[in-house]
Length: 95
Image (cartoon, rainbow, N blue to C red):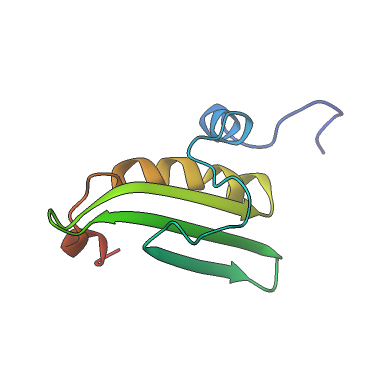
């Protein structure tokens, strides 16, 4: 059993949870080219990912996210969006 103040996850996960990056501010997704929503009804986690696309270069120029859920669900957004930026769409669609 964990004691008060103890962290159950790795230090890497703690860093991603405590210092998230590329978080979607607000709920307006009108300025984005793509919006994806995924969740797990059993545990209550839900993630929205939005992208902007340079249509001439066929690449993702911006990728942001917002997650509701546990620490591991929230922390997973940060390492997911970083490699997506500047990724060619044809590779990103394979995810």
